[in-house]
Image (cartoon, rainbow, N blue to C red; front, top):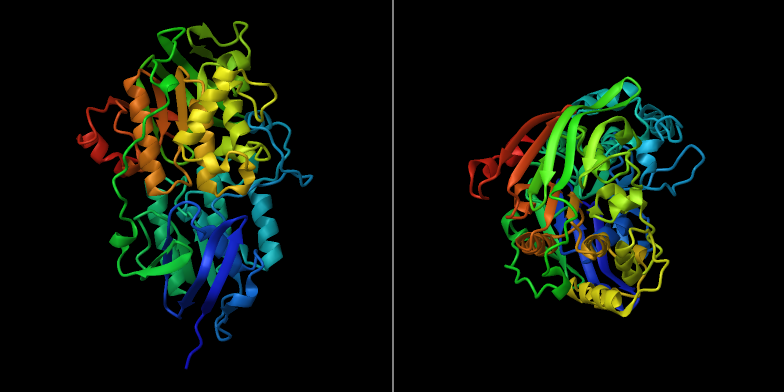
Length: 498
């Protein structure tokens, strides 16, 4: 009888007082390609790390490599995101450094990173070129790692994994940060990897999957449950929004009707022009959807509004009715804004507790360095309870599952009821239930008059309240239009265009 490729028998694990795996068993046979789903914190990533050998549960996990295969006898785990390092091996960057480090050359280039990976794994460079081309990554070889957007970092992870082409490939959230075109191309590459003999496990709650997937499972109550079809894996119960905190029922206090105005904005790094003649105006109470392919300039555009980009002083940019460079500090600007982005999550100090992390949003600091008055403490407590984080409020942020970390930072974003919410792919790492819950909250805040700029690729993961849309392509404004409703043709075709 042929031995299974992977056999897990009665795996048990507790984290603190919480049961993660309760006699979890899983057998993967040759030819099976799996997608593993489950709510945030159910143990999907922990199980992947256990199989890969990154967690010490090997006694209950049997892996049988195919000795006749030409593929490397390896299990490779591609994390949902990873922390890169500078040339001195240090990873503790600060958020704004992404926009100020271009001249310092502090991190490796994409070419250097690929060269190191190829040499370490004895790979032929000719084999990586088709992968780079397929994922639209060929033009980024000279870019520093710190310059890449979250979607571009995800692509680099995937390029390295597909180039190695191990016998077992486990990918955690492969579609996070990828535009629609890139997701489709990735699925073609994954189908090819399977055809070449690789076995894959995709950890995802997304419905768009490669055609080679033929098995579905979810982790629930510490056990792995096989599901017969894709549709049953992604059913989400209707979510009832709880009572939002009283302080968020009030309309934000606007200092100006003009939130942001850009006049012929141009941003360049050396010979590379990232934004080209951008003209855009955001007024109080508007709810914008910002879209565009990976590398189109979305993150750079937002960095101008957030006050993070030093080249804003060389452009005609107005924030909250003040021309940039008229004497205001970066902290003056941030007082008006609540921000979350994948990059901000990367660089956030995860050694603060959940409560401290949320409270730090009142002062735009990374970590809490002030004693809060009673009224502000009450606001933090209300948000902790609203987001279901009461039992975690004293936990360090870095001990939580990625989805719960994101909920903490979402709570931090809205704690001061800001004039402007900048939500750059805010639901990365959240399961369907959490995504629905958060977007319902955004809709509720919009009723109260909050201004929103929301970056999102998935039509199913957007709030209903967005009423304007700007699309970037190759650093230029491709389209500005009204969104009438979520049933309009504009909404129905969002993913087709980006």
